[in-house]
Image (cartoon, rainbow, N blue to C red; front, top):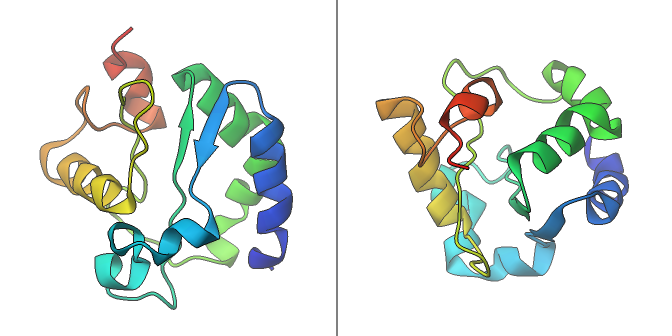
Length: 130
């Protein structure tokens, strides 16, 4: 089961090149990180949030570590959504984003399409501001 491996995946992230920070369980007690309030279905919503030194570092972790093997099997654990299910965006050094901010960026990606403020892996290489 996916949940049984979250600690393992988080440990890989924590050791990965370019990793800076990730949302931890205790951070979800803050109102701005309440998945139930943000997504309306806490029992099925999964939200992760992390910061990385570069797009390339994040892309490497997501697609070229064991995380990629779990990503390939996501249909076994998660319902399919036609809209983008994740978003990437740049932040200022030292900024700690919240799930509220992430939801705002995700909605922006869904409604306005990719931009330098909200993109995904497919469009990120073209929209990332270097």
